[in-house]
Length: 203
Image 1: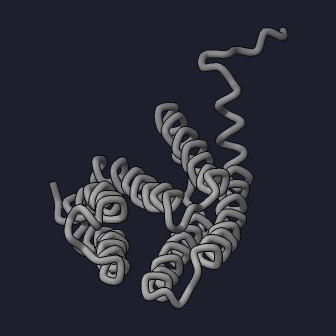
Image 2: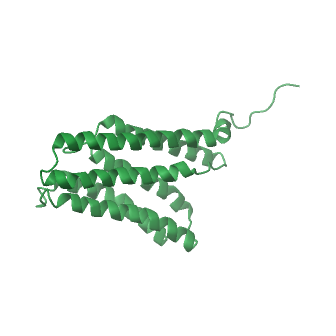
Image 3: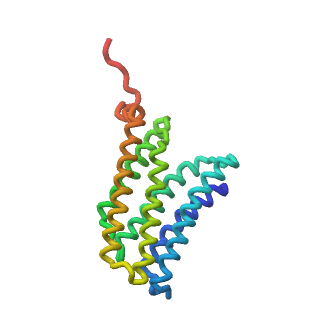
């Protein structure tokens, strides 16, 4: 268990905390005006942990097999959890948009795991790293929009429509990054279609 791994685990545990504060802020005695700032703080901690776990892993040679498994899992859990949370009032994101993130990460994660079991690794893509940045920016934009909404300067309808457009743009890039990942690793992925132990039966 390295420092990088602890930071990754922190990112995983922040996800349900974010959801609880978003849903139950009134029961926790938190005003609607304060809520966006708490959520911004939690999201900031989550994103900073993502930055620093990679930094510590490389800087202090703390790259571990556990970290290689946990880091992409934590990324998917943290960001998809945030967008799933936003499907609830007052943001009310369309669930279809969130499924783009879910399907992309599920397909890429499954391919990466299967290829690893077959003995070869799928190369990471710059588009995948930029995808994480785009999704983070989208989440921050929604939380910033919640500030004028909480002070009644922004209607719920405007919050919903603007948030949906922001996430739709992030969803389009997420879809592109998934296609780019599959295309760039197409040779390795095609190997999955060849059964192990297959031999040429032609004389």
